[in-house]
Length: 89
Image (cartoon, rainbow, N blue to C red; front, side):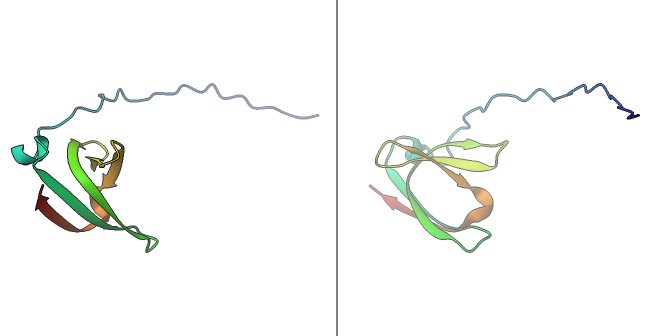
């Protein structure tokens, strides 16, 4: 004889607000006058550089969304940024 225990599952997920674009940190960044390069290093030691203009800050995920020259949005986690270089286009 086997006994099967059943537990009703009720998922209670908090309502999450949609991602709201934040105002740019610098107005010149929004107009495309400044290009920003981020040197990133992940926890596993992987290094890379992301270059583009800051599209917006995803505050809930703590990431910048960077618009690359190829018109692609790239997620840049704030915790992985080791160095930031700004240049005027």
